[in-house]
Image (cartoon, rainbow, N blue to C red; front, side, top):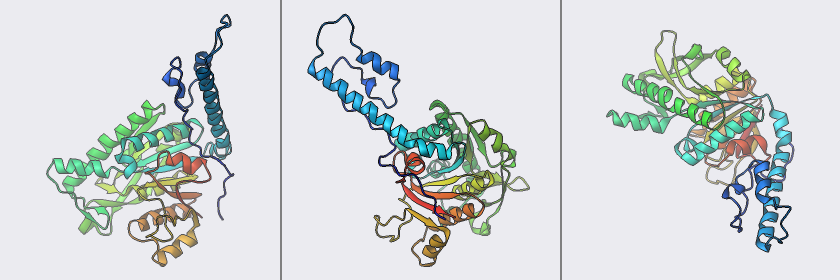
Length: 349
């Protein structure tokens, strides 16, 4: 059964105001969602003045009023989506280009805080590959990968845990808090959130683990309080041995455990393509049977297969929709959740 969305004719993203020609107006006037009282005070004309405003000032005021109306229209068009998803949990896997670029990182952080402010309950699950590689090189270890997975010996595991849990996680928590949200940093070890088991290919991969089970007990009060859990995917097995868990896999299992409405995987591609050689052949929406057929036909291959499998497994465990979206697009989260167009491929049960 396919999930449909109310039709919108415009993008959700705020429309920036055009440059103002009047030297009497503050540059802050063009900021999105500026306080109405400040806007009006800057355009107020003294009642005792008999001077007629200059044409340039009048034109600037008219342009400002038009831009303000456009922003209000955008917010109004978002209302059906906000109503639909208010109180619903959305799990976001964050990584790739959106983690490397400061501009895209700021966009993701603002999107998460905005979603939280309008009543959604976001959960952020993150990787940190580039940062891990950088620190491994600092200690003289050359990063190694097999089939897209990091080869993780004892020293590498120690660096992975220090970087993901101690650096990347706390930096994301700080950025969310600065943006006006309330974030709580966790890793799979905390309160036995994730229990790991060795990968079947442990002899070649080392301490790369799989998710044995998820206990979301610690997450429920955090989410209910309106806070944003930020989860690093380092977990331990029953003996306490630490493992590096694939962030896509962990996000899917966490989404199932918390009963999420949506799972969103931020990637460095536009989504699932009907033709891998044609960037314009994006599949906007597909069900489980359809995506399995694409895998069987070889249309989905390489690094996209684990992401698709992660989505299918989450859907099978009760998550309503799973989306593979383009993290290179600014505000991709808002576009996917609060508009018809989206920025990737949505897979339905």
